[in-house]
Length: 250
Image (tube, rainbow, N blue to C red):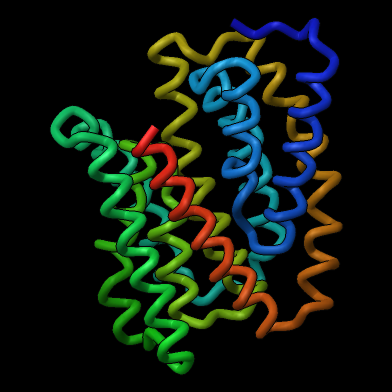
């Protein structure tokens, strides 16, 4: 149940949304990682997921359109996005068959392994040839994780990070990927009666602080340069993995 009478709680949510916007503006992802735990702490996880569904779809659609000229190829990007959408649907099956805690711990282990490899071998790069061959299975796997555990970034960001894309190309690709999953998520929430008109309206309002934070994040990313951006992604992946472990063990 959403209660808007606590000003401190609302202030915390507003701050979390703006911080999520800063991270999203810098890396193209990350708003839910900051905002969802805060909203869930104030209300509950169901309210958090439903509220973030609308701003996730809108901001990723807008970001995808803004960076459309920096895409790395229509066939690759669309294959990645469609695979993610299909995987999101399949994630409900995984949710019924596998323990979520085990899935989260496995994903966290894979992410940490990737980061360790990158630190041990800074030249580690996934070639475009191999990326083209892996794009569909990786997209489906990330979508499955999104549907089963509510988060796909550990797989999707690790994959694109290994390709060593420029920041604009990275954002163009990941934004369309997230937007495609959002198109699947919204109807699902409505079908199960979770997306009420009240929460839909709150989700629309949540777009405002996100959009306010995104230009600041973009400005920070431009100042730190490509190497700095790569380090930010690696740190972000570690934080994502730690969050998966924390969620699985509590």
